Image (cartoon, rainbow, N blue to C red; front, side, top):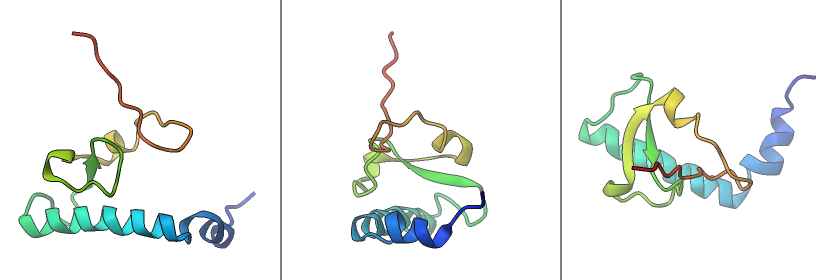
Length: 87
């Protein structure tokens, strides 16, 4: 069954909350572009360490590959689950 993008946008991506989250992620990317940290087409993502796209503090952002940024285990509400490593 093919994906129904119109329904997906109506039910999730078009919500006010999701639009604000997307705008915040885009803001972080655009600031990194302006500072020369990333380049267009470099296949890198700006990772929000705490999983909150509205937290655009420099200490919360890092540049990672797309595959690494999109491979984190997620919780039920789609946030990144922080994995604590034993030392």
